[in-house]
Length: 274
Image (cartoon, rainbow, N blue to C red):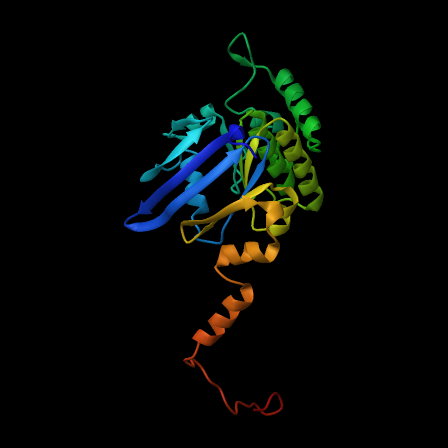
């Protein structure tokens, strides 16, 4: 892949909290029209890294480029204005508003510069949902939707912001297999339109199904980046955990040498013995 397709680049990103280093060397290169899997276990530094990319946190050091221009985002609003949108695990719909109102919240269509144009918003929402093949009624109240439908609305909202970079943090955590297939079709549409997607999921099968490239963090450090076609599941797991799962399990077993509790000859008449 050519560097001319580079949308977003970050290198040497560091962040500490109260003297505790959460991220030591956060790096990524995201190209237009690709899905880049950001991989790592709990405590790897993924969330801190994404918070910095979205302007939620300020890095202690490191550099970020967007469209080859060095930048730093002071707030999520500045990141969004620059073309970076995010779909998070934490759903935050307004329950008594309609699907259309939630999608265009803060970006409402208005008449005479003041009155909200509900008809236009519902039509635009219906067109968006139909294009994405999301089976959700734009007129429905959010509180009447299933958790999976709410997630699809959040995804549609992020996609409609027409960002060049889209961060998806566990987007399938609340949806089933059928809705996941619909989401993947939407991702393929976005790739065709040149959008770059950073995709985070603990489901490795999803990464091998949808991602083009990967980057692995472990314990706050950058480990490796590469093409998904050049790595298999076992090797990716080894990079994430620092060894095979069998090695990890054996190490844990061997390290527990001190007996914390031992029971012998424990019996109760008529129930159990020894």
